[in-house]
Every structure is written in structure tokens, then in C-alpha cells.
Image (cartoon, rainbow, N blue to C red; front, top):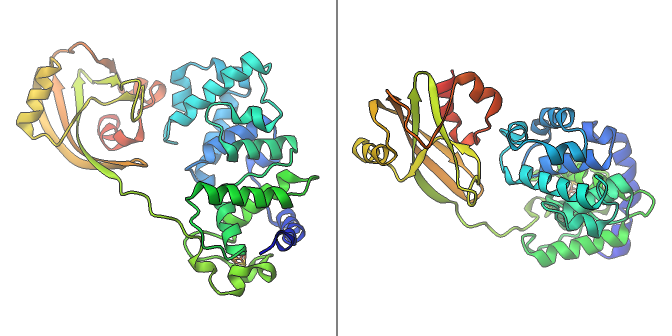
Length: 348
Ligand code: SF4
């Protein structure tokens, strides 16, 4: 498909978008801050799941300076359950740069946005075009899928060169007077009509007369994406240390998976009772009673934890842990959802 043909999608796409766009909280008032927060939350998370998080976050931290100054615990609590916590940390790092270098606002140019922590080409493009009206493309997975179907392209969309090529094609057809609407229209079409999983709704698509994938009957097979490596499985043993109704938690190391988060103490490997007693002894824990709990599983992007759990009743609190009661735990501490199955046993 030539650029001219791709140019032909602009008008029907915009007309369709203006009549069919979903009403979303961040679209109603697309300030740079709101667009930024929503785009970061929407990475890896569904629109419906993001809505309540977005409302809570904006109420608690309505401006860049408020985000820059937020205590870590508050930030993590606001993010609890969204996962991929490095996104929240990067938000705060970027907010601090904005306070230091840009008077507490998002810089109104693509290149400066791209230099901020946690902001890649897609997010910089989304903020620049939607909030500032700058004509730059924003190519996410939805846009890649729509374009590859439109042009009947068989290249691997996991290849960065293919992504770059799609971004260049988009840059050439992007309408200068409404780049934000165009980018959002492409994403919206991908999210609601040209959907993933081999089931595009071509019969109701505003672009079906222009779509090469549809014309050739191959839209369902596209796009092509090389398979990711299989996730590594890691066995872990998790301990609920309980003393006088309080739970012993601790901080994870500052690097690696879930860096710096609060956690239930855990050890590598699948430990039987004897192996668990050895670990407890190493921590200086003297158990009164140890009970095996049901196994649990948590899936991260590259690793899968298969967990064995023990409930350990103690007489005395050993050092090296922070002790928290049920209410304090629920209100003030954010623990990764990886531990949810075991935490629920304590909080219910
Ligand atoms: Fe996607 Fe089908 Fe529309 Fe082509 S016609 S853009 S494949 S929904």
C-alpha cells in the first residue's frame, strides 16, 4: 500500500472516531499531566481496570509537584494492584526532573519528553500530539496491528525496524491540524474494531473499503509477531510470620524484581518443613507452630513464581522485620500482588 492509499484512511477514520470514541476520564480533559498518567497506567493494564486508579491518583496527586513530593509509601499504595511498580517510580523520577528543569510542567516538545524517565517514543508521541497538538506519531501495539492489516504486511512487528517503518508511514499521513485525534483514532480502532486475537470486526470497520488485509482475506492472520522466550519458572517458599496478631514484613533489595517493595519474607526453592526450619533459624525466628498453606502461583512478564507457603506462629519478634497489624497493613503498606494469596489468609 502506498503512502497515498494510507492517506485515504485519514478522513473516514477521523469521522468514525468523532462519532464513536469511548468517553474516557482522561479524554474529557486532556491536560498534559492527565494524558501522561493515563498513558503510563494503560501500559500493560486494561482501560476498565485503570479508571478507578486514575481517579484516585489524580485526586491524591493532582499536579506534577504533588507527585514529585509524594512519600514513597503513598505512591506505592496508589499503585498497589496495577503491577509493574517501576512505572510508578519512573513517574516520580520524571516529575522531579520536571520540577527542577521545567517549572513543574511537562515539557511541550517531543524530544524533551523522550528524555524523561519511563517515557519512550510511544508515550512521548501520545503526550505531544494529544495534549500539545504536536504532529508526531504514537505507535503502540494497536496501531502496529491496524497498519499491518491495512497494508497486508507480513513483517515481524517485534522487529524494531518494522516499528520504525510504521512510525514513519504514520508521520507522513498525520493531519497537522489534529494529530492527537488521529493518533487516538488509530488506537481506538485497534482497541474496539480491529481487535487482536484474530477476530477483527471488518464488516463494521470504517476502513474496510481501503484495507488490503481485508481485501486479500488475510486480516485474521496478521500481524506476525515472533514468539517471546518462555517464562522462567522460579520456585519460592513464602513465610507468614505472625506474632500477637502482627505480621512480619521486610523490604526487597533495591535492585532486581520488585526492587525496594515491601514483601513477605521468602526464600528460593521449594522447601519442605525441614528446609523451612533451617531458613527460619537463619533469620533468628523461633517458631511456636508451623503450618503448610496451599500452593500459589504468580506470573510476571519474564518469570513465573510457584510458591509454597508456611504460616508461622511466633512467641517473640525477631529483628530484621517490620511488624504490622491487619489495618495498618491494608491502609499504609503496598505489597506486590504476587503475595496476594498468602496476605489474604492473614487479612481476612
Ligand atoms: Fe482491521 Fe478489518 Fe478494518 Fe482492515 S477492515 S482495518 S483488518 S478491522
